[in-house]
Image (cartoon, rainbow, N blue to C red; front, side):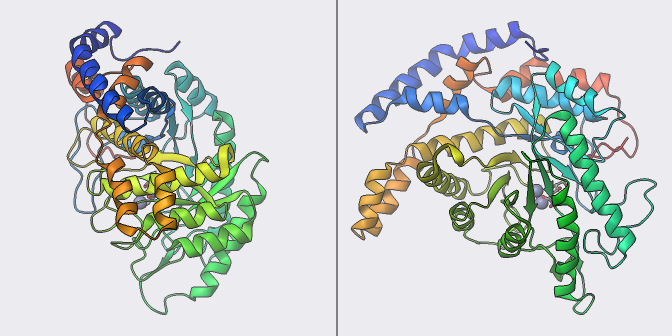
Length: 432
Ligand code: AOS
Ligand code: ZN
Ligand code: ZN
């Protein structure tokens, strides 16, 4: 059993107070679903089995290039980030793993990370490399690129960093490396578009060769920023081509914020799943471009449609289909713990809504070219308020009926604020 950061007695009181209300809503929903031929207990079991990883960098307040407004009691190092992630998991029971980012989260001995995680009941999902900024004291700058740099020395350094990330990940039990590079051009003609991708592939081949047998490498694409004219890995087509070139351990990662506005992301998900190249997700939401807003806060229907494709893939491919679910958000105006808890629940909600889709009916409408009823079949699932299922799942798993309310009542942030006094210039990424 693990260290409990929120007092168990407080949590029990919280759940006791809400128990009757949750049960009444659950019973009402159960009857309604039964009339639709759905078993609420099956859905609750599914909800209890759901997991999405939390990004260590999300535990701090983010910022924009204009300013960063620090929050109270922000974690000052990876161990404090893990504590906050422990709270998120304790209350939601939906986030049993953390995704680390190096060198931000690097410590002298990576086994300490594993122990700290174990003490909090946390495991580790994919590790992330950072060659989009220069670490203190590094020899070659990434100002003009990392894996694609013209400078062979910069490329070698970036490759070595990724291989080090694999080693660190092995020590903590991770099974994947996520590579996102900001490499690209800010001016037409700045670099040779094809040459940059050739250099990227050469660099990635060296990283791929260092992967253990049971590891994957996830290629994360992003349309723009910081390269505002041409990003080398800008879209899923490029990501797919590179993953195919590299081999079976290379897969594509879909960050929901990394597409042009109005892109049909669920179709990208369907394509990648069809060809066995869907590695995982960075869930968040977006209005304009990589806003890193809270999952489900802008377009929950899109999130549902993504999960509808995942349900289809799971039905076709069975247990073999297992993409990684991770959050990737930047919190500027909210308490990061509250945002990450709400987001984990939003992703879990979309998952359960997708499990409500009557797939046989949908297939029938598709076969019969009944576009209207096909769309209504999806809407019927999407419109169902599955909140009582999620609350019951949390209560049964030992979490909180209402995670944000329990968190606020616990005074955790106040305790963190006195234990972690603010320091001038502290960054969200926790470089200490
Ligand atoms: C950048 O836009 C990406 O979303 C990456 O996943 C990045 O590594 C992460 O957001 C931390 O900055
Ligand atoms: Zn991301
Ligand atoms: Zn991003």
